[in-house]
Image (cartoon, rainbow, N blue to C red; front, side, top):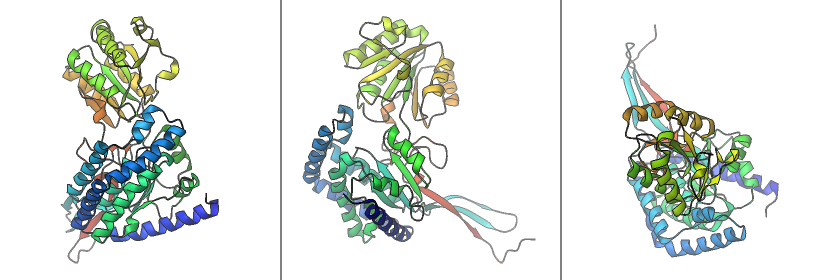
Length: 421
């Protein structure tokens, strides 16, 4: 393990090389970036056996660390999941290039013509846990938006991330772009994270993607601006006018499809009028599916449930557990979400347009859904090809962060010898 001085020197070098690469990427042609991503996708698929082999080492490491089943699921790479990585890379490659696009333009009475044009942010630091596919998603999105990126994956995904990163570098090399455009921090040492958070001379923004502990650390220690991705404390409110079939299907999918992702449902709010109908049916179906349902006093009469404690409200389980409680109406649901939610993703199940509109107006989350599984809270499902994370803050980027959200802008002002009076 390197000592602190060596880590600091290494991170300074990585930062300097990233900044130099960003200067070249800022004006790299769209076709060149597209070629780099296409070759990277082909390389990932060609090397899929080696990536699975590297992932097996990480899975063994994770089991030795006694990671939960949900965390191991996030870490696991199968051939099908690698195919998903490839599809994501190709989707990002095929998107329109955001750099240089004109966001708005107008003429002034002074004779000036003004345009607001998208530009790269510069150098982005991405700190993430467990999920090795983030290596591909983050690297590709940053490149598409003309940014250099420094990737610091979790210790659990060290080998998998390294194998995927090598494929991205092959794409850069093939397209003639600087290989320093996508760098992976080559150590598990946590000191590298602290160094990355203070590289103000080189890094323009930090994106943390992981649990509450990681995000809290980043927000406390970062001297670089942060796109915050807090917990996914995802609520589903079952309204009095919910369709029972839709409710059952959506809730089961939202909770059980993949419990370890940030869009998984964690709390169920049920209108008092449908407790004995939809509520009973949904909770029994969850229990039958193997979900532990922790309820308030009213719902605890349902066989197979357990009583919730105060800590269950506002908990991100990332597991086969869900909290459930009765509310009087949509306003009570809104109040509960406002108190316990994380401004990530929240859903209403209702056929009443007025109630849905009130929910959408008054719940202040990055993503709001109606009659749809919260597992769709994903940049790929939004048509972004992939995402670098879900930003739950309100400055610059919010919701799924794709290539377009990884840009800033500048103003281009053109006159004809124009003078200010």
